[in-house]
Image (cartoon, rainbow, N blue to C red; front, side, top):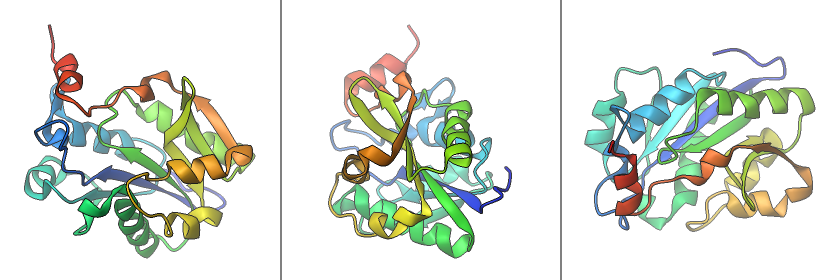
Length: 201
């Protein structure tokens, strides 16, 4: 973890969902010998993010036991059923409490198993060099998470509503978004078939 000359970079893992479409907690699905939440947490811990918060909600006990030994902060979103935006707001508030000099926050999901530390550091490096409002992953026609948001958008993040997460904020700021090609960000775990494809043959 390293300090940015313009402030610190926060890392935010969204892992509060109930996995209704999957039928079992996606946080605890295994990938390459680790649960998805462990994989996501280690990815950020090894990155250039300074402070990391993981937001939990639907699977608190199992998720906590998976990451308790890591240097990250756990935030419980008791309103997780209202949508992903509530987790973004809860996590960002916690990060701001922890770090008074945040220059940006990287928002990630626990169910994008192929995202690497290198991918996260690409977002941070682009921000440090170009200082855009947003640095986001591009995969196909989609521009989305993982994505970095500069502090000038923190208030906008705190105004998000519903289950669209930060996607609408990215769309609203497309002229100011730097894009990093990360095709593997397209792979997420929403349905049983998605989880089955993670299992070894």
